Image (tube, rainbow, N blue to C red; front, side):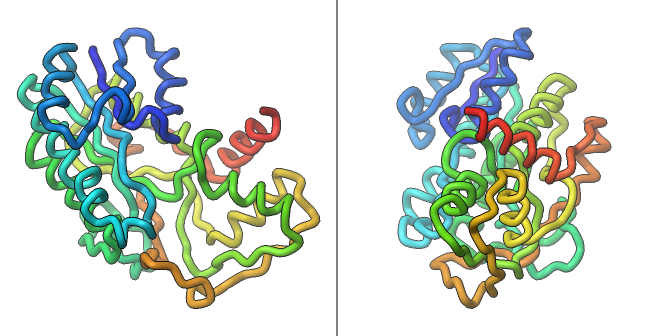
Amino acid sequence: MNILITGCNGQLGNEMQLLEKENPQHTYFNTDVAELDITDQAAIEKMVMDHAIDGIVNCAAYTAVDKAEDNQELCRKLNSLAPGYLAAAIAKRGGWMIQISTDYVFDGTNHTPYTEDAPTCPNSVYGVTKLEGEQAAQKACEKTMVIRTAWLYSTFGNNFVKTMIRLGKEKPELGVIFDQIGTPTYAHDLAVAIFAAINQGVVPGVYHFSNEGVISWYDFTKAIHRIAGITTCHVRPLHTSEYPTPASRPHYSVLDKTKIKTVYGIEVPYWEESLEVCVRKLLND
Protein backbone atom coordinates (compact mmCIF):
# COMPACT_ATOMS: atom_id res chain seq x y z
CA MET A 1 0.00 0.00 0.00
CA ASN A 2 0.94 3.64 -0.44
CA ILE A 3 0.50 5.25 2.97
CA LEU A 4 0.49 8.97 3.79
CA ILE A 5 1.73 9.90 7.27
CA THR A 6 1.04 13.46 8.45
CA GLY A 7 2.77 15.11 11.40
CA CYS A 8 5.91 13.04 10.81
CA ASN A 9 8.10 15.37 12.91
CA GLY A 10 6.02 14.88 16.05
CA GLN A 11 6.37 12.24 18.76
CA LEU A 12 4.09 9.67 17.13
CA GLY A 13 5.17 10.54 13.59
CA ASN A 14 8.81 9.89 14.46
CA GLU A 15 7.95 6.55 16.08
CA MET A 16 5.95 5.62 12.97
CA GLN A 17 9.01 6.31 10.82
CA LEU A 18 11.14 3.96 12.91
CA LEU A 19 8.59 1.17 12.48
CA GLU A 20 8.29 1.76 8.75
CA LYS A 21 11.69 0.08 8.41
CA GLU A 22 10.20 -3.07 9.95
CA ASN A 23 7.24 -2.91 7.54
CA PRO A 24 8.96 -2.48 4.14
CA GLN A 25 6.03 -4.05 2.27
CA HIS A 26 4.40 -0.60 2.14
CA THR A 27 5.53 2.69 0.59
CA TYR A 28 5.40 5.68 2.93
CA PHE A 29 5.00 9.38 2.27
CA ASN A 30 6.09 11.08 5.49
CA THR A 31 4.94 14.68 5.62
CA ASP A 32 4.87 17.60 8.01
CA VAL A 33 3.81 21.17 7.36
CA ALA A 34 6.80 21.82 5.04
CA GLU A 35 5.74 19.00 2.72
CA LEU A 36 1.95 19.20 3.09
CA ASP A 37 -0.29 21.85 4.61
CA ILE A 38 -3.19 19.77 5.91
CA THR A 39 -5.39 22.88 6.14
CA ASP A 40 -5.14 23.19 2.32
CA GLN A 41 -7.80 20.92 0.87
CA ALA A 42 -6.55 21.22 -2.71
CA ALA A 43 -2.98 20.34 -1.69
CA ILE A 44 -4.23 17.25 0.14
CA GLU A 45 -6.25 16.05 -2.85
CA LYS A 46 -3.26 16.55 -5.17
CA MET A 47 -0.96 14.59 -2.83
CA VAL A 48 -3.43 11.73 -2.47
CA MET A 49 -4.13 11.48 -6.21
CA ASP A 50 -0.56 12.06 -7.46
CA HIS A 51 0.84 9.32 -5.23
CA ALA A 52 -2.12 6.92 -5.44
CA ILE A 53 -2.45 6.93 -1.65
CA ASP A 54 -4.33 3.93 -0.19
CA GLY A 55 -4.43 5.01 3.45
CA ILE A 56 -3.70 7.98 5.70
CA VAL A 57 -2.45 8.05 9.30
CA ASN A 58 -3.09 11.56 10.64
CA CYS A 59 -0.60 12.19 13.44
CA ALA A 60 -0.74 15.97 12.96
CA ALA A 61 -2.60 18.16 15.44
CA TYR A 62 -2.56 21.39 17.39
CA THR A 63 -1.59 20.00 20.80
CA ALA A 64 -0.74 23.08 22.88
CA VAL A 65 -3.72 22.64 25.20
CA ASP A 66 -3.46 25.94 27.06
CA LYS A 67 -2.50 28.06 24.04
CA ALA A 68 -5.52 26.62 22.22
CA GLU A 69 -7.80 28.66 24.48
CA ASP A 70 -6.46 31.83 22.81
CA ASN A 71 -5.68 30.36 19.36
CA GLN A 72 -9.08 28.88 18.64
CA GLU A 73 -9.05 29.60 14.90
CA LEU A 74 -5.74 27.82 14.18
CA CYS A 75 -6.63 25.01 16.57
CA ARG A 76 -9.93 24.44 14.75
CA LYS A 77 -8.25 24.47 11.33
CA LEU A 78 -5.75 21.77 12.34
CA ASN A 79 -7.88 19.66 14.67
CA SER A 80 -11.41 19.99 13.25
CA LEU A 81 -11.24 20.88 9.56
CA ALA A 82 -8.03 19.15 8.43
CA PRO A 83 -9.13 15.61 9.41
CA GLY A 84 -12.26 16.11 7.31
CA TYR A 85 -10.18 17.25 4.32
CA LEU A 86 -7.87 14.23 4.64
CA ALA A 87 -10.77 11.82 5.02
CA ALA A 88 -12.65 13.27 2.04
CA ALA A 89 -9.58 12.97 -0.18
CA ILE A 90 -8.86 9.35 0.72
CA ALA A 91 -12.56 8.43 0.44
CA LYS A 92 -12.44 9.39 -3.24
CA ARG A 93 -9.88 6.61 -3.70
CA GLY A 94 -11.84 4.15 -1.59
CA GLY A 95 -9.04 4.17 0.98
CA TRP A 96 -8.88 4.17 4.77
CA MET A 97 -7.91 6.68 7.41
CA ILE A 98 -6.58 6.44 10.96
CA GLN A 99 -7.29 9.60 12.95
CA ILE A 100 -5.44 10.05 16.25
CA SER A 101 -7.56 11.63 18.98
CA THR A 102 -7.44 12.24 22.71
CA ASP A 103 -8.82 11.56 26.19
CA TYR A 104 -9.74 15.27 26.29
CA VAL A 105 -12.99 14.45 24.48
CA PHE A 106 -14.21 13.44 27.98
CA ASP A 107 -14.71 15.78 30.93
CA GLY A 108 -12.94 13.46 33.35
CA THR A 109 -15.78 13.01 35.85
CA ASN A 110 -15.89 9.21 35.51
CA HIS A 111 -14.54 6.87 38.18
CA THR A 112 -14.23 3.83 35.92
CA PRO A 113 -12.31 3.57 32.62
CA TYR A 114 -13.93 5.24 29.62
CA THR A 115 -15.17 2.90 26.91
CA GLU A 116 -15.45 4.02 23.30
CA ASP A 117 -19.22 4.47 23.56
CA ALA A 118 -19.11 6.60 26.72
CA PRO A 119 -20.75 10.02 26.23
CA THR A 120 -18.24 12.67 25.14
CA CYS A 121 -18.17 16.00 26.95
CA PRO A 122 -15.01 18.02 26.24
CA ASN A 123 -14.40 21.06 28.42
CA SER A 124 -11.49 22.72 26.61
CA VAL A 125 -10.97 24.19 23.13
CA TYR A 126 -8.46 21.43 22.43
CA GLY A 127 -10.93 18.71 23.45
CA VAL A 128 -13.81 20.26 21.51
CA THR A 129 -11.77 20.60 18.31
CA LYS A 130 -10.37 17.06 18.55
CA LEU A 131 -13.90 15.67 18.92
CA GLU A 132 -15.00 17.71 15.90
CA GLY A 133 -12.05 16.22 14.00
CA GLU A 134 -13.14 12.68 14.88
CA GLN A 135 -16.65 13.40 13.65
CA ALA A 136 -15.48 15.15 10.46
CA ALA A 137 -13.22 12.25 9.51
CA GLN A 138 -15.88 9.63 10.17
CA LYS A 139 -18.47 11.60 8.23
CA ALA A 140 -16.20 12.08 5.19
CA CYS A 141 -14.75 8.55 5.03
CA GLU A 142 -16.64 5.44 6.12
CA LYS A 143 -13.33 3.56 6.48
CA THR A 144 -12.12 5.78 9.32
CA MET A 145 -10.55 4.36 12.47
CA VAL A 146 -10.31 6.83 15.38
CA ILE A 147 -7.74 6.03 18.06
CA ARG A 148 -8.00 8.07 21.26
CA THR A 149 -4.87 8.14 23.37
CA ALA A 150 -3.61 9.95 26.48
CA TRP A 151 -0.49 11.32 28.19
CA LEU A 152 1.72 10.68 25.16
CA TYR A 153 5.50 10.71 25.54
CA SER A 154 8.56 9.44 23.67
CA THR A 155 12.25 10.13 23.09
CA PHE A 156 11.18 12.67 20.44
CA GLY A 157 9.82 16.19 20.84
CA ASN A 158 8.80 17.92 24.03
CA ASN A 159 6.86 15.90 26.58
CA PHE A 160 6.26 15.38 30.29
CA VAL A 161 8.91 12.68 30.73
CA LYS A 162 11.71 14.77 29.22
CA THR A 163 10.59 17.85 31.15
CA MET A 164 10.53 16.03 34.50
CA ILE A 165 14.01 14.60 33.90
CA ARG A 166 15.36 18.07 33.06
CA LEU A 167 13.65 19.78 36.00
CA GLY A 168 14.62 16.95 38.34
CA LYS A 169 18.26 17.59 37.54
CA GLU A 170 17.93 21.38 37.79
CA LYS A 171 15.69 21.95 40.81
CA PRO A 172 15.83 20.83 44.45
CA GLU A 173 12.02 20.64 44.64
CA LEU A 174 9.08 20.15 42.28
CA GLY A 175 5.33 20.33 42.84
CA VAL A 176 3.32 17.93 40.67
CA ILE A 177 -0.44 17.40 40.51
CA PHE A 178 -1.66 14.25 42.28
CA ASP A 179 -5.44 14.53 41.79
CA GLN A 180 -5.48 13.99 38.02
CA ILE A 181 -5.53 10.27 37.23
CA GLY A 182 -4.80 8.59 33.92
CA THR A 183 -2.40 6.35 32.05
CA PRO A 184 0.74 7.37 30.16
CA THR A 185 1.24 6.21 26.57
CA TYR A 186 4.67 5.49 25.11
CA ALA A 187 4.32 6.68 21.51
CA HIS A 188 6.28 3.65 20.29
CA ASP A 189 3.60 1.33 21.70
CA LEU A 190 0.86 3.34 19.99
CA ALA A 191 2.78 3.13 16.70
CA VAL A 192 2.97 -0.66 17.09
CA ALA A 193 -0.81 -0.78 17.54
CA ILE A 194 -1.32 1.41 14.46
CA PHE A 195 0.80 -0.94 12.36
CA ALA A 196 -1.22 -3.89 13.67
CA ALA A 197 -4.32 -2.17 12.30
CA ILE A 198 -2.66 -1.33 8.98
CA ASN A 199 -1.33 -4.84 8.41
CA GLN A 200 -4.43 -6.72 9.60
CA GLY A 201 -6.83 -4.33 7.88
CA VAL A 202 -8.40 -1.17 9.26
CA VAL A 203 -11.70 -1.93 11.00
CA PRO A 204 -13.63 1.37 11.14
CA GLY A 205 -14.83 2.76 14.45
CA VAL A 206 -13.54 4.40 17.63
CA TYR A 207 -10.81 2.73 19.69
CA HIS A 208 -8.90 3.58 22.85
CA PHE A 209 -5.18 3.03 23.36
CA SER A 210 -2.85 3.84 26.23
CA ASN A 211 -0.49 1.70 28.25
CA GLU A 212 -1.89 -0.53 31.01
CA GLY A 213 -2.28 0.66 34.59
CA VAL A 214 -3.48 3.78 36.39
CA ILE A 215 -1.44 6.57 38.02
CA SER A 216 -1.40 10.27 38.83
CA TRP A 217 1.02 12.83 37.40
CA TYR A 218 2.73 12.85 40.81
CA ASP A 219 3.24 9.08 40.77
CA PHE A 220 4.42 9.28 37.17
CA THR A 221 7.05 11.88 38.12
CA LYS A 222 8.27 9.79 41.06
CA ALA A 223 8.70 6.80 38.73
CA ILE A 224 10.50 8.91 36.11
CA HIS A 225 12.98 10.17 38.69
CA ARG A 226 13.51 6.72 40.19
CA ILE A 227 14.24 5.14 36.80
CA ALA A 228 16.45 8.08 35.76
CA GLY A 229 18.40 7.87 39.03
CA ILE A 230 17.43 11.37 40.13
CA THR A 231 17.67 11.51 43.94
CA THR A 232 18.34 15.18 44.71
CA CYS A 233 14.89 16.57 43.79
CA HIS A 234 12.04 16.43 46.30
CA VAL A 235 8.70 15.92 44.53
CA ARG A 236 5.66 17.08 46.48
CA PRO A 237 1.99 16.50 45.56
CA LEU A 238 -0.16 19.44 44.44
CA HIS A 239 -3.92 19.82 44.11
CA THR A 240 -5.12 20.96 40.68
CA SER A 241 -6.39 24.13 42.38
CA GLU A 242 -2.80 24.96 43.36
CA TYR A 243 -1.67 24.91 39.73
CA PRO A 244 -4.27 26.81 37.67
CA THR A 245 -4.06 26.55 33.87
CA PRO A 246 -6.00 28.31 31.07
CA ALA A 247 -7.51 24.99 29.91
CA SER A 248 -9.17 22.58 32.31
CA ARG A 249 -7.84 19.01 32.43
CA PRO A 250 -9.81 15.80 32.96
CA HIS A 251 -9.43 14.65 36.57
CA TYR A 252 -9.92 11.03 35.50
CA SER A 253 -9.03 9.97 31.97
CA VAL A 254 -8.30 6.26 32.14
CA LEU A 255 -9.22 4.62 28.82
CA ASP A 256 -10.66 1.11 28.48
CA LYS A 257 -8.60 -0.73 25.85
CA THR A 258 -10.61 -3.96 25.60
CA LYS A 259 -11.86 -3.23 22.08
CA ILE A 260 -8.50 -2.67 20.37
CA LYS A 261 -6.96 -5.64 22.19
CA THR A 262 -9.84 -7.88 21.09
CA VAL A 263 -10.14 -6.73 17.46
CA TYR A 264 -6.40 -6.80 16.73
CA GLY A 265 -5.21 -9.39 19.21
CA ILE A 266 -2.52 -7.10 20.62
CA GLU A 267 -0.98 -7.06 24.06
CA VAL A 268 -0.59 -3.65 25.66
CA PRO A 269 2.54 -3.10 27.78
CA TYR A 270 2.35 -1.94 31.41
CA TRP A 271 3.11 1.78 31.73
CA GLU A 272 6.17 1.37 33.96
CA GLU A 273 7.80 -1.19 31.67
CA SER A 274 7.42 1.15 28.70
CA LEU A 275 8.63 4.13 30.74
CA GLU A 276 11.80 2.22 31.62
CA VAL A 277 12.46 1.52 27.93
CA CYS A 278 12.01 5.18 27.02
CA VAL A 279 14.07 6.61 29.90
CA ARG A 280 16.92 4.18 29.21
CA LYS A 281 16.95 5.36 25.56
CA LEU A 282 16.96 9.00 26.67
CA LEU A 283 19.84 8.46 29.12
CA ASN A 284 21.88 6.54 26.55
CA ASP A 285 21.52 9.12 23.78
